[in-house]
Length: 196
Image 1 (tube, rainbow, N blue to C red):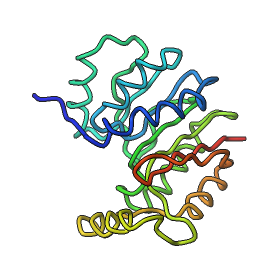
Image 2 (cartoon, rainbow, N blue to C red; image 1 turned 180 degrees about the vertical axis):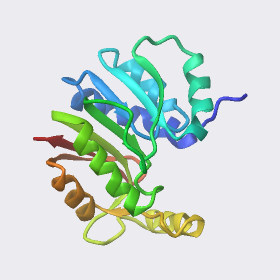
Image 3 (cartoon, one colour; image 1 turned 45 degrees about the horizontal axis):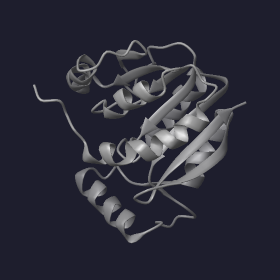
Image 4 (cartoon, rainbow, N blue to C red; image 1 turned 60 degrees about the horizontal axis):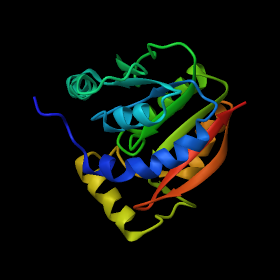
């Protein structure tokens, strides 16, 4: 089996790491929701050795994740949990949760389920880091994001770039406050919430 590969992961991992290095300085155990190819997991676990990085995804992605994890020797990088946003999460408390390019892929009800899971499993004082494109005041931030949204909806009408205001509402309902909204390359953002 060839290791799965995402060019966008390769392109954005350096910029994301710069932010995570600061934001997760005091964290210890991170749950990555939607590990995907595992490129981010391998890179971040290697560069952020103080963290235990727990991968998770749907069963269909586990083989690729294992393939990436087999190619490295990192004691702080954990084998994937089966995490389905329609089901209870198979983990106790963590002090950090990271997800990249997921909220525009899953349906809006699953976005809501995601935040319910975060509310239940993120420790008080823990951080939630979300990477991806977002709309502000109901508007796309650029034409390429508008085109991307059309492409997403052509695949599945339930997909789409989410409004930051709606994301904030779901987060606030779970005791999360947006602390930082980092500008990232390629018209993406990295949102950092803290649970109080």
